[in-house]
Length: 334
Image 1 (cartoon, rainbow, N blue to C red):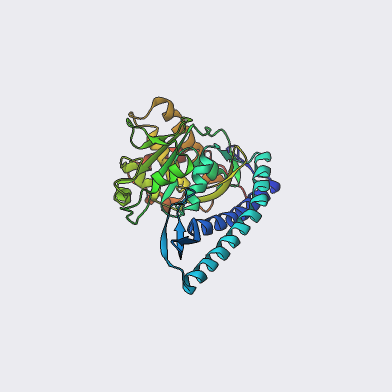
Image 2 (spheres, rainbow, N blue to C red):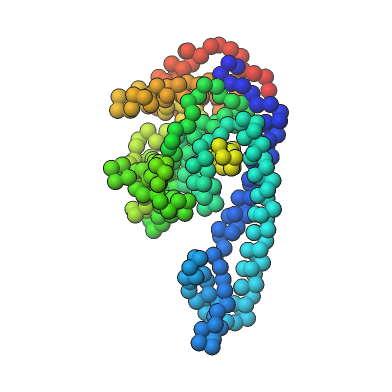
């Protein structure tokens, strides 16, 4: 048990409440996102029309001359919008209170800058099959999945790594670029590293993709990732899906790769000569400690012979090396 410290009952209760209250809030946010920005009855040269408004500037288009059908449509729209706004506003207070409590209880957190990106991605439904958090920010989600603090894991860095995993082609949608611009209009693509975007505060977002998923991105979308074969490993297994807090006390949801595959990919990366030497040491430490935590506190992610048989030749030696080095201690009783 030296690798982890189990959460207290109060911490566990807070995490349950955080998840429940976040889900109520995000459901209302998604309902609002699914509605037009606004619908308005407008008079043009003495004739009435129903207009769909696209933005704060009042830009929009006519939906046709005023009629009983369009009047009913406007009434339905206003009722749906008012209901979603009421649910969102009512849920935000309890959610913020629980997030502040999670922070006070020193539960695992991620960088504040990642929060708006994750919330906007979730609002747009992108965390349900289009994007995975694959960098160090994922480690906090793994701790929550283990119901324990994973000791001595390297902290998050001043960047944010996302993997594009969509299976359905989005040829005409700039999904990533619209997401980043909605969060911060100062994001620009790094011309020297086109898989990376950076905002005015120098916060970096890097996008990765497995070769099998590269063709589902629109060719005009940005940042533009370079397909990497090792990203295929992170598509295997069962993803972790957790709600946690950022360092500013705001909530966020993370969907991250299966922790076993994430850890083994880190161990593989630690031996790649092309990898930055400073990062290779961190990769090794992350991979070993995370596998220890999985063995100790995540029985739903078995590290057994059946799992070992699924490993490709590049990863199998790393799994065996970890298994040989790991102390032969019995797992905790649950």
